Image (cartoon, rainbow, N blue to C red; front, side, top):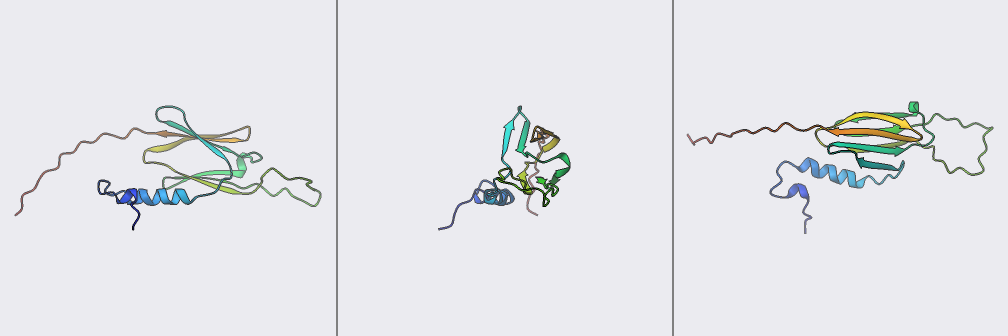
Length: 138
């Protein structure tokens, strides 16, 4: 028995890419760093990542084909003089990706008290009405 995916529904034509996108997103099991996504208005969103210990120069935010990618890599400050009795603060590098819908744009980003905020806004699409002519067979 084959599994019915949402991209294979007969009323949804041309959504195969969206189906693959959902599958790819569901497979991403990474949990570091923790994050929140909040709606800040009818068309505004904010992604907040907990990046304690990371400075601005340790972080990069890129937009790669509708995919927002946040990367963090701290400069190595370890030396023979540092001896940890307990190390509970994560300092590992990370990459966190978010897929943005068409029309969603990054409007800004800021780092405040260990939290990286990325603001997004959905631009209203233009409403286009088009009449399709019916041709007669030759």
